[in-house]
Length: 110
Image (cartoon, rainbow, N blue to C red; front, side, top):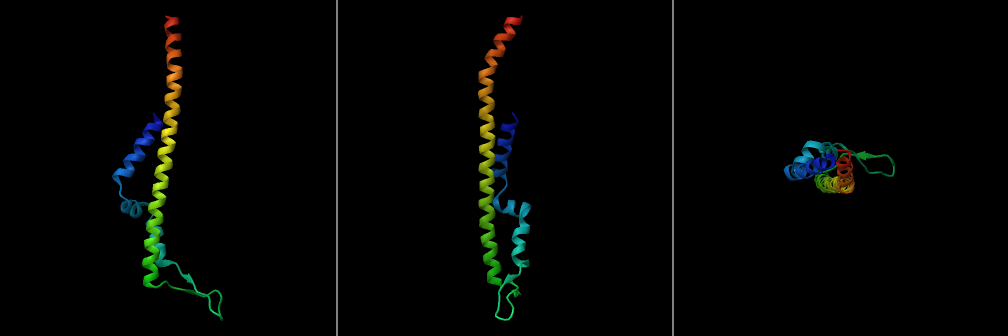
């Protein structure tokens, strides 16, 4: 029953929470890192030279990060569904095998 609960919760969360809401609610710090991270741009004089990103680099970084976060969410959803389904199937298999045996034993005891 726990696995079916987990499966229902995972599917419900995927349907109710949009990708944008997921990013803002759980992973916005990764988007914000695009504006705060310095970019290494070595020069002849200084091989450790760091510069602030340009506006175009920030926009590209945010777009790339949004795609990555959305794909990451899809992978987590699929693994959660797969895990819940496997545990549910195992539960049903055990139930279908053992329940009839249990019922026979309980009738013999009466």
